[in-house]
Image (cartoon, rainbow, N blue to C red; front, side, top):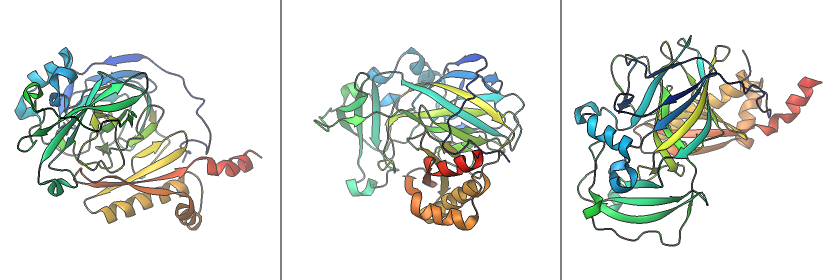
Length: 362
């Protein structure tokens, strides 16, 4: 079995195939679900580059700021009864030539650029502390400054009732706008909340829970410069992206991030020489694996076992050595607690294996 990447090394294989454009339109999005029976919106070969639009389902929180003609068309033309069982607008699916179940899609995220200068955060009824706030929901609109790469609260308002219908348009031009977070700036770190392959199940699979297919992982590190590894479950992989974010903290406590549409440049490489225990994230500094379960303790255990498998299968450590290393060098954190299946991620620094790399070379 091949290593994912030599410990501490950088990739020399940057060769690219064709460049494709995949715009988000009513015909190229699927709202709220993955489905192995969906016809591909795009077919690519291993190594191809794809410029793809990811649209937030929260654009209706400030339509005068977060809509453009393309976003408005999706909200207007995708029927409300076709937005289920989840909530996220997914662009795709993308068929990868020769991808078979068990193969790995190595998705290199090269660039993520905000589509407009605004995003929305909702303190929602599925938020972790919803009852602590008297079961009130509140929307905060953030303005993005491309020059400084920071976001600031533009205004906030209380949402009447419960925010339940995917694609809600709140008619905020008539709402009671209030100031919020005066003097506070939030670093922008654009990333995808939801991306993954079609699960091998019959019918629609909700975009809300994360799982072995990827899905709604909500790890803010899945941004430009990172690489995600997803195990294909059906022929072609049928890879889709959505739920774009501009910033989020670990936990996603209120139920959402700063939700904002993104333009994404990525490269998909088919790996037939690789097997991974769970969705794997590689950043310039870390390897990060994930565990998901309705019980946070079980999610923690699953993440631990996934990292154990990574260190033994791909770094070559013994189980005893890997277990010790995880306790002294790996960091465990709660990814999110609001997506039905809670998430835990564990990251291990790549540069600590430099001595292994040198000993192998000699």
